[in-house]
Image (cartoon, rainbow, N blue to C red; front, side, top):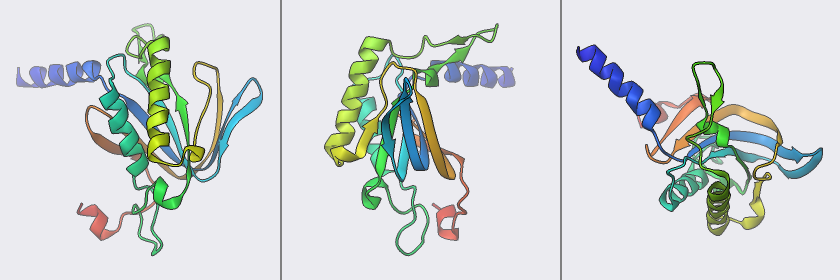
Length: 188
């Protein structure tokens, strides 16, 4: 009975999570092409795939914008890993709207995007999110794709390092990393 209750709570939590979600990749370069025309390209920095949940608010946007600009993905001048963020390095960021981050699969294995924010509201919220990033960093270093378009996203991973920011859980989880942690990093 206890095992059944725990399993139910875990499954219920999986399906009721409502938060803005960003998948971040540290890149050497990244670009977006629409209709065979390049619309954005960056050098070293981050590629951020941005998913909006239908219940997201401006506080979710602010949390994620702050985290995205402060996440320490690079080594410092002394070679210590995970010590500097994008602003300290002066790198660029490419944001790509991606409603599919809230896709689920039906029993027939068909994608369902009912948890994603609808197009009109999502466009407005995504633009607010970009404005928040530009307000807190150099606007000329924040790039994006074309909202609502089919995009070809190209990138050269640096690491690879892939992280996930979830606004409601307030945590960042590492998906992959090729950089070893120092002993002091393992204890924090």
